[in-house]
Image (cartoon, rainbow, N blue to C red; front, side, top):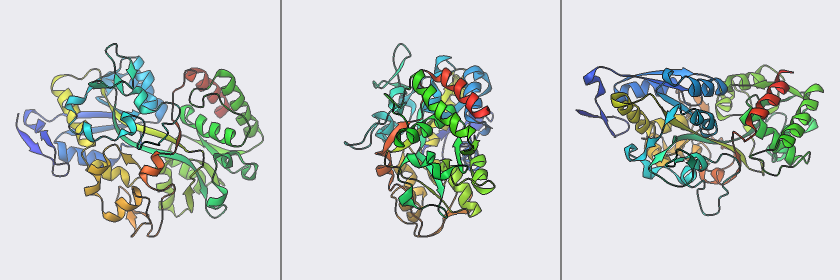
Length: 405
């Protein structure tokens, strides 16, 4: 097979178009299905890339039950259990992942640095390696369930014209009576439950034996607290996408709420004064990745591996960095970023210049500082990972009742 060199990644990729142009279908969410990446992948890989952009729950349901409708599933480790249970995706051979040795230890061992805490819940390492019986475990093997890619450390956001960083040092602020009628939560059970739990525990409203794997009794008590708050008018709203989150702070009288980095980017574009909190209890972390549909074989499987290798080759990581996300091979991204971008996004230093988002429009003003410090500081302050708990089905029922009431 003839070879070509991607002008940005520097990795050898097969010239698949010489045998007829291939189309890869990617199922995922707005976290990483950026148009800039789709266009870049088509240019670098010489194949057609089709994105199927869904919300978390829809993407997970489709990935589990309709594996014939996609080639690659681009999601998060906490969304993996159900898809793996249905055998909708196949193990990934790390011998075919060119830069496997360069992927950070955050997924391989759960920690970056000797004193880092692994965090409760679905730390990616606990679901990374595929064992001979197809169980997922942290014991290293040649096969993995998902190629680690984008990730971040989330908390809650607040408007800086009504509060300052000294008031926002704990998750407890998210349920503080001061914000009655001005608070909002993310409406996704495996995410929102942990924002609420961290807030309730920090506020002294309840404690958990294991925050990452709550009992039915703990779920009930927490949802009772939230339902009581909702009935009293405490919450201004609930959201499922970064766009909805940004709209709540732009158009509604929301002053504090769950927030993702993409939401912060949207608010920056709109000129809304907002900051992400750096809570003392630690972040709620998530880690994205790429899975291979069980239907892939032969030439289509080869093409899918090319896409996986392209994702961690450098340029894609620079694109997602401009959206506030980290990449599992950060030093591959650095040459594709300006020194000012690297210093702001990864080193936690003040922005030396205005910085663009993935679309080239200015998102960060000169002098701004990313809350929480450097990548290595933030990755060492994880309280809990987004998680699909043992009582996930029960949680979803209770959460849906709460959100819809």
